[in-house]
Image 1 (cartoon, rainbow, N blue to C red):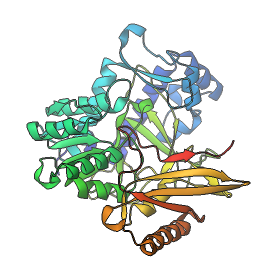
Image 2: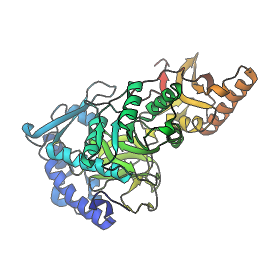
Image 3: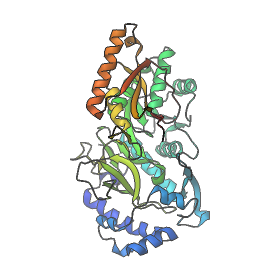
Image 4: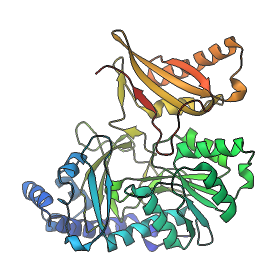
Length: 431
């Protein structure tokens, strides 16, 4: 087994010893800004009080609203002139958040990203094509730095312009790509439309992330592009990509616990969930000086995977992200996550590459409609066949989500697609 650096080989004792030292340093560093100084004083905790990793529970949670309240520079813990880059994420609710990085912060992030890429087989001899957006979004620059740290020829293609992406792949013989799962399926469709056989193209590895996706979608990406697709996890508040990554076993994402402390809590109570249960992911930076963040409530839902990994690394593994606490919608009193719907429909061979969940009012009632693209070979003129397929999809969904949806079958590639994260839910209900 090959490793990028020594920290990958640490046992639990070594990981936890490093976490104690780094958490103490982080508490000391974070205390240099008024926000955390006040929090620590209220909680009556000092760096000396950190003796085991579990002492982190004494520190209050940090939320996205906290970050917004401190925008733009309220959480800075170094002089302003030490900051060399700012990333910002506005989301959809107004006030943005900002994350500021020192030179050492960026170097640490690049090392973590290079570790992730090396783990799945990326090497200096590879040509890496980055199909992610650049700018304030962290996905592009973060993984770009990791590829350059490995010494790959790195192509900053950016998002979109699919025909140009295909030309770059062919001209430079790109062997590794970074791509959002929904856009990977758009790329695959474009290849087919242009008579290209993905098996004859050079990519062998796809790094996918930035939007929650199911195992069924991952397998579709692999089949359509002829690659091994590895799931990644990150968020701007914790740097960006590089927080956790699958190894070649493709069985959960290793969280780099030398750089982050990971917790999973009940989103309603804040208490730890039982081992193996799904809850909200909480993360703490351990290697960031410019703007450390402690016990950040990500709103992402996942669980710790039990047992060891065949790759030999003992850094905790989390399951793929199941959704977000704020993604959930309620129909007829039932809590539903979009990922539950995707898991069902993307496992069906008749279904194409896209779908849309529509929530609307029908008089006093709420209706759940799901528009599903059907592959051309199944979209026949026989209405009995299409009606049977509608009923089949509706039954399988009802078994999973306990609500019977209206299923509308549409032709392949008829639903709108974008070059960024897919918008899967359209809520037309009167508020």
